[in-house]
Each structure stands twice: as structure tokens, then as C-alpha cells.
Image (cartoon, rainbow, N blue to C red; front, side, top):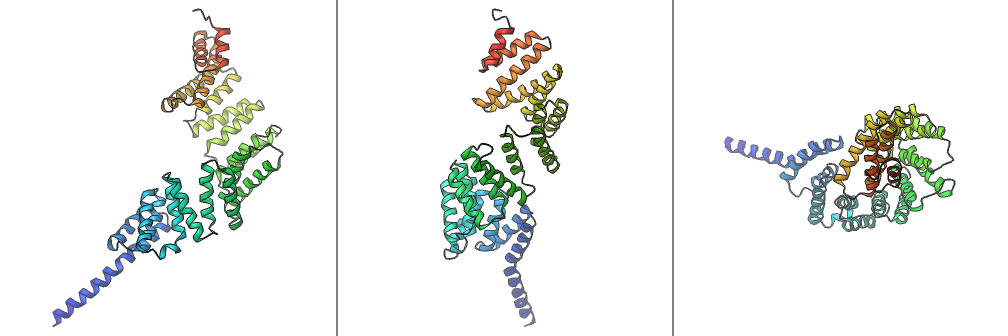
Amino acid sequence: MKKLTLILFLFTISVAIYAETPREYFKVAKYNFDNGEYNKALVFVNRAIDSDPKYISSLLLRADINYNLKNFKEVIDDITLVFNIDEAREKSLSEYYLLRGKAYRELDFVNNALNDIDYSLTLNPSNSLALYAKAKIKHENKNFTEAIRYLSKAITIDPSNSDLYYLRAESKVKLYKPLPGTKIYDGILADIKLSIALNKEQFKAYKLRCTMLKRDNQLDKNYFISELNAYIKIFPDRSDFYSERGKANVLIGNFNYALADFSKAIELDGANEINYRNRGMCYHNLNRYNQAIHDLSKSVEILISKLNENRGSKSLTKALSQTFNMRGLAYKLNNNPSEACEDFKNAAKLGSKSGLNNYRRSCNVFQ
């Protein structure tokens, strides 16, 4: 009798432990998810689902985890499974229609994405994140008017989201191509200012502001440099603003300051041919032709490599032709006529009129 009682007791305990196991796995998975430990979270949520394949909370958590891990197909599979398991409950899960829509968008199933996002908005018209997701799709498809409309609506619902102001500013730039001094131009700068105020680390907003300021030919270059100084203090490890400050210094004749900026940009981003080309131009202006040739050669090397991967690219072809022509001029001034003529000829073959003119003026075309 005692043995039978003990067996029953142990059986009851084991059932209770088993029944709690999926919940315990879920709790551990949720804890890791909240702390950004997505791979650990995935291990435990998988155990919870293995124990109970219809555990809806775990399936939804796994969808959230996989979205952060960029496993978008798995996101779609889990959310679809949840909707099939509990059709009544799906109408209370507008955020998961949104999540599935975002996953579809990442996989370039745009129509599926819009269908899910629209249904999410049907269930919850005040979901600013769904409006933002729809605006991003409209923006990507160059429907900037619609993007601006959805972003403006989202901003009225949630005026504290930095991304909304940034994307609205970018959409307005694409749509209107505004001129400095116009209301649209000032409105874009206002959106960028709000985006930055709400998120001091919003790098792309600073970059867009830089682009907008460059459009103003009347803008004092020293003021522009002071702006870039401030950006560099916030983002000391991003090459973009060093490169922009270098170009601004070139325009006011501060070639040595420009050299320092382009050198820093190269240190941070050695794969960007533009930085080598710009530094090469600085060396050229300082009559340091050997160093100019070295940097322009590096630019040519990178451009040829990129063209091999993107054959037919007009922008890369144009950049390469210009760089050949620049190096040709440096070779010519460095008393290397044969190398200069070869570069002018290559520039001309790629469509450079300046390269062709330099070849005709400087080289014996009958050789």
C-alpha cells in the first residue's frame, strides 16, 4: 500500500512538473528576449513549443524573437499558425498582423505586407507604427505623396517618434526637390530638427540636414564647417562628416585641413573610393603629385573592382573616367607623359570629353 501511494505521489509530482515546464521555458525565453539575448531566448522558447506545440504565447514570442534575428520566414510561419489555431483570438492581435506584414516586406512580398498592415489598421486605426510601416512601403515605391500623408497621420497619434519626422523630411526632399528659402525647404529642416531633438543619436537625420545645407549656395562655408564640427563630436567614428568637412575646407582653400579630414575618412572607411579621390585632388592642388597619383590609383583600383561586380553601372563608369582624367593630369604635371596619355585615352574610351580633349592636346594621336 505504501509503495502504491509513493508511486501515485511521484506520478502526480511529475505531471505537475511537466505541466509547468512549457511555462518555465517561456518565462526564461521572455527574460532573455527582454534583455536582447535573442539566440538564448530562441533556445528556450523552442523547448516550450516542443513541450506544447499549441502554446500560443510561446509561438508569438518566437515570432518576435525571429524578427529580431531576421528569420522572417519563420516569423510568418509562426504567426500564421497562431491565427489558424485560434481564429477568434486573431482579431485581438493587430500588432501581430503588423509584425507579419513587416516580415513580408523584408522578404519583398509587398502585396502581402500591405494586406496585413491594412488589416492591422482595421483592427487598430490608431496604431502609429502600422502607419509608419505603410509609409515606408509607399516611400520605397516612390509614392512620396502617400508616404507623407501616412506619416503626418502617424505624427498626430505619436508626436514623440523621431523616425516619423525623419522619413517625412526625406519623403518631402524626394517629392519636392526644394529650393533654399522656400516654405517647403524650411519645413523639411523643421522636421529634421524635431527628429534630432527626439533622438540625439539619429545619424541619418544629421546626414540629411547636411545634404540640405549643402543645397544652399549662399550658406557661409565656415558656418557649415562649424555644423560639421558639432556632428563629428557626436559621431566621431563615422567617416561621412569628415569627408563632408574635407570638401568644405577645399572650397575655402584650406587644403591641409582637408587632407587631415580625408585621411581620417579613409582610416574609418578604406573601401570608399571617393575619399581617396578627394585626398588625391588635395595633393594635386598642393603640387604633391606623387601622393596624388598614389591616391587616385587606389580610387581607380576600387572603382574597377566595383565595376566588375556591377557591369554597366553608369555612375561607376563616369566616376572611373573622371578619375583616369584626374590621374592623367597629375602624371602630366609630374613629367610622366606616356602614363598621362594612357590615362587620357582610357578616360576618353569611357566617355569623358575632358579626357578626349586632354588626349588630343597633350598626346601624339598619330603614334
